[in-house]
Length: 235
Image 1 (cartoon, rainbow, N blue to C red):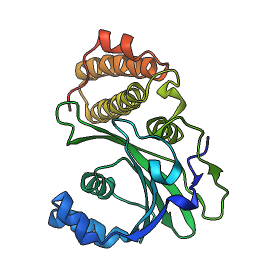
Image 2: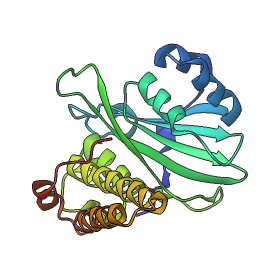
Image 3: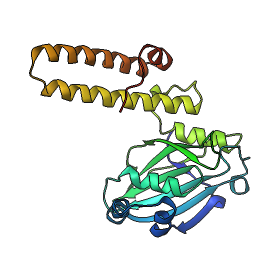
């Protein structure tokens, strides 16, 4: 499934979002404001997917889905920019980034906190590759409600090892675990490269083998088994 959808005209919103409004609602620091200034040209609230615009029922966790387009000043965007927008807007968001005649989709899984329904939990970000602006889009997935539609839109951005037979939270947890373990493997490799003492290199190599094995288990949809055998790595 492609992540590029042809949104219904009836859901068009088309409002420019001033950067200062994001700063205000996200509590932006000077460093974050500098990222917006140097990396972002314009933010537009393109579409509002809601019961009244696409005739799908809301769910407890997904009452609306907002589609934001972000035109960039350069090819790279610091994800802190998107996190700030997610903090400022209390709905699930799908971002379409554009730069130099190309576009890509980026989104995090966003859900109300179980401890405080007024607050939101935002996962790591998932993204498509860059495609030409003129590349075709496909219709929105057929869904029973907005919650199911949101899951399908996010699934289009997620790697295959996320496990299609799991619910969205489990799939997100799996991908985040894979990313965390991958980072751990890379950190161990760096330690190994820097270490000169033979006995310490032997110990680090053993640690690396274990980390690689657990990464392979995660990638083979064996998250529960891997978690039982080793605690999550500390950051």
